[in-house]
Length: 346
Image (tube, rainbow, N blue to C red; front, side, top):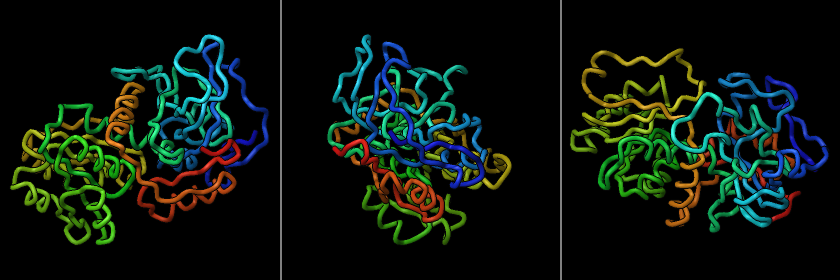
């Protein structure tokens, strides 16, 4: 089989395509499964890993990418959760089943474990999750990181009630999923963006109001205007140090702020002015993707509502480096996906 490997840090050139022996169920023990990977997708963390700016150090020669989906083609003798032919993905934190994450569960595909940029992946059956039947392979490959992160942000804290307001920032994949999930939960959505074209696309996706943060640097005021002066009940805070001050000011009195930080912010740390902090009793909750149970809950909601992830572009397996490059520079609206045709199509 063919698989990509991270052979050097500091740039996309460090990712090399190799011909290697294909996996069998046995290396992961009797509960191992082999997945013919049909598609994989990129996240910001994958760029951070290349530049050694990610919190966890990557294993030398690791297969990149946490996100992928494919078909089970072989199972170990003790496997009970899956059968040959099942459509699956790997959880972002394979050892985090449910509840709170523990220090021994931080391993991640594409970083400390081999990831999904390969024609075949060997997994333990406990690491895998069934993906909704209505999704294409490319759509299913978009879910494990950005999708679960957005779902956790919306459902992992105080329960949202229909009619409450969710604020999303920008048009990154987590924010786009958050718009979709917030509407699915019956909420009103206010989104921020930097262009009229993106504003139109956000409204088409379900956003009720869109605020241009370039034209309105003090955009929290406009958010409050769109909420009758009350503020947002939940802010999906994807900007970190650059936006946290405005997010606090845009929050409702007892609002929630789901804080996501990828480590790429220009500012060294989170700073909130005394005036902003004193203006709210909001709770700030740190979110880092989610558990396998949250992934499964999200997939049930996606299946029940026929939701489809936003895909910006798809590249063939042989052009994985091009996919990385365009993800880093082209400002995609939605996920950048790599189709792994060598493993067979849907």
